[in-house]
Figure 1 (cartoon, one colour):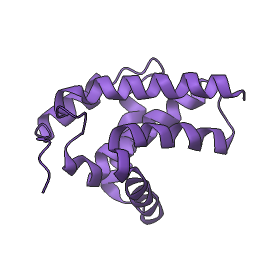
Figure 2: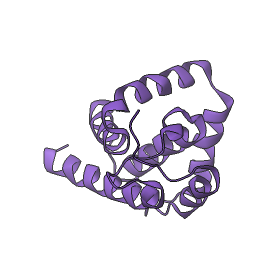
Figure 3: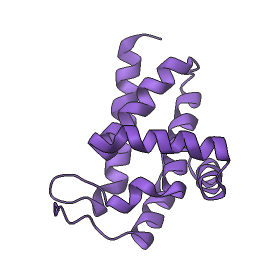
Figure 4: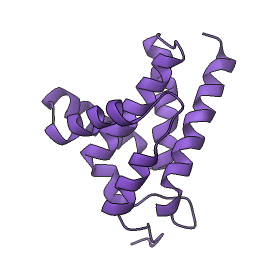
Length: 134
């Protein structure tokens, strides 16, 4: 896969997730802290990314990893690596909430990245980030 195609996929996914979470972001573009530890939301994010990349015929594991890492970095910034480590742990343990989020994404998302269902879920379950630092 050419680098330009990966850049296109990164941009598409980052933009769509940014729009999906925009109602909860603070003035600096941060999502609520609680989202970082929420197995359901992170399972859904991973699943949407993987489904989209599969639909775009991105099959190389390293290419998928580069794109998915960029999405998590866009959403969680400095905390993206700890979130991804937690995701690996949820996958290993087969965490039920993580698996439910992953499966719900498979059922609700489509290849055109329609994430209204996820946007609705996060609006019902999280409050907007405040941007306050402790």
